[in-house]
Length: 237
Image (cartoon, rainbow, N blue to C red):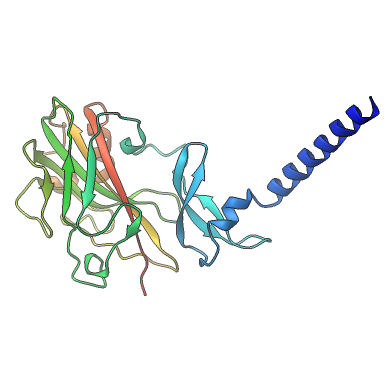
């Protein structure tokens, strides 16, 4: 009996120590993810929901990976967060998913838009839309590329594409163009490229310069059959 209570006491002691240790800073993997990184660097961190983008932040025990989330009060939730099962996939000639975006696609290079290829679009797709987003430190969503009205026959976009689809307004200066990544501050920033397969044409303002990423996201929310995304990071030197 004494041994039984002794084992229970030991288990409770270890549990309390674990809770205290985690409360003090975070799970060990969160520190391991940022080993050798700099404050502000973006890494992939494993959570119960799977791998998510996280930013390396300073803590009393060293750098720790803290997931980068859109605030719950944000009116814009990325459709790509939904779980689809059609096998719709997206790839890029610029880099692999989770890779680094080459400088030629940024404001420090030629500012070229990346080549993209998608496959296995769901049945019933009438057209595609595409957006490139990033989430800076303030938690708001910013759009670097807003493109809609892409024909259903399209299976990708060429590097520096033009003449396909309709360009909407970017977040930086409301310009109608691909806005190459040009992050401020130290560390890498994560950019998500998402293509959406739509069951109909979205209802949008007639003037493209009034079609922002937020407006397009809302307009396609109910007509998105599936979406496919890839993430790339970029840091200015």
